[in-house]
Each structure stands twice: as C-alpha cells, then as structure tokens.
Amino acid sequence: MTAKGDFHLHSTASDGVHSPAWVMETAAARGVRSVSLTDHDSTGGLAEASRAATRAGLRLVPGIELSTDLGPADVHLLAYGIDVAARPLQEFLAWQRDGRLGRVRKIVQILAENGMPIAVERVFEIAGDATVGRPHVARALVEAGHVASVQEAFDLWLGNGKPADVNRQKLAPRDAIRTIHENGGVCFIAHPVFIGEDYPEVVEQLAAWGADGIETYYKNYDAATIAIHEGLAARLGLAKSGGSDYHGLGNPDDREIGDIPFRDEQVDDFLAYLERRGVNTGLEGQPR
Image (cartoon, rainbow, N blue to C red; front, side):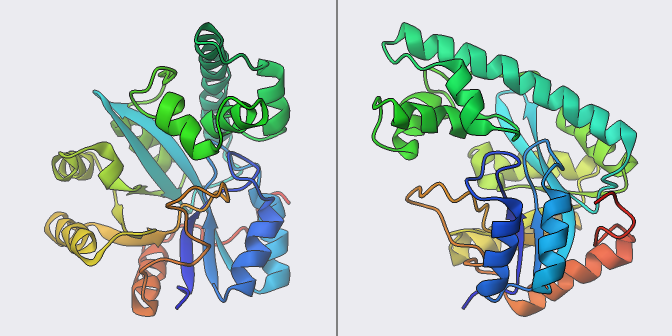
C-alpha cells in the first residue's frame, strides 16, 4: 500500500528529474496526502509545489536537505517547517549552492583527466535553474556515452570514495542544526545508514547537538533496519519521519513516491510532532 505521507522528495529545483508541480500531482495521484519537498540547498521549488499541492488537495510541509561533514562521514540533514522567507536562511543556502559550482568544475576536470571529457557548460544546462550536483554530472556522462546509466556513473566515478568524488565546503552538522533552528525549523537526520557502519554512534552525537528526529521509515528499509532506528529514536528521544528520497533517476534501488514502509499512524505521529513544535506546516504567508 502507498503511504499517505512522504517527507523526502526532490524535484528539478535540485537534482530530481521532474518539476515540483509534477511531484505534487504524482503524489496525489498515488494516494499520498501529506508531503515535503526537500530539495538540496534550495527552497526554489516550494512556491510552484505549493500551488500544485493546493490544486491537488495535498498538505505540503516546507523542507530542504542539507549536506554536512562530520570527519570522514557525509551527514545529510532534513529541515522541516523552515521559514522560507527568512533572509539568513536564503543567504546560507546561496553560500551552499556556490560551493556546489566549484565542486562540479573540479569533478569535470578529474573526469577529463581520466579520459571521459564532458563540458561543464553542459552540466549546468542539464541542471538549469536547479541546485547543481553530482546527478547532473552523471546525466552528462550518460549523454556523452561514457557510462550506461546514472547508477554506473556513481558506482564507478562519482560515489563516495570514487575517483571523482570531490568534497566541497560544508557546514559542520552542529552549525547546520543551529541554522535550521534559528530559521524556524526542526532537524531530522536523513538516511542514517549512509553515514557508515558506526551510524548509531553518529546519531547519538547529532542528537546531543540538538537534532530533533531521525528518518526511520526510509525507502527500502527492511524490518530489522527499521527496528534499529525505532530503538535509537526511543533511547535518544527523537521523533521519527519517513520518505522515499524520490529523484526519478531510475536507479535500481529507487522507489516511487509513497512506496515506503510508513504506516498511517506513524505519518499521523510525525505531523502531530510538527504541530506540537509549532513549526510551519504549510506555506501560508510565504511568497508565491
């Protein structure tokens, strides 16, 4: 069954392949009732998403996904209920996006040195007005015939620890958590298993720094993995969220919007938590 809530979705405002309106319309068509658009380092798709969500009868929680570094670990954080119009937030996000531009140029240089030339201008064309990232480089590699798929591009070249994996300037998690809170939001730890084998210890540290929740009902998590996350949430006093991390890239482990192990009562608990925290659970009063 399709979950009635999916709070981890991407659009063409960052590295997804579909427009914010398409994501909202498709969520509604699949029976999802509450969503969050969480593009990387950008709230640029939220106005379009809000209009489409209103037409489709969806509840839209404003969100973003931030990338942070904790030693060698790449830690992603989901912000829900942020004040989209807050100037400090938008200045911070602009700084994050600037870092992505330099990273992409370096990635393209490394790929050329390894016999896989692509034009950085083409990567930016693929990204359009979106926050540019590795998936746009991957699509350029596929287009140029250097790899057969986006997944292959990451497996061989762009993924963490691969030859063209380039770090960029990012906030430390503690600073990102503070930024989220200062701009009216709550902070959830995204897909903790991607942090590495020691992710329970990292989650404990992030909770000590003020993280509010953990993405517990994610994508293709099995029952054992969900149980570990639920145990961490109970022990550390964290709220629980769920999401498909939908990009529309067609990777083997992708799930459709709402195709996640997130029961109705768990969705209700998450939304009730947001309401208790008094964060923005819609875009009323925000610029359209």
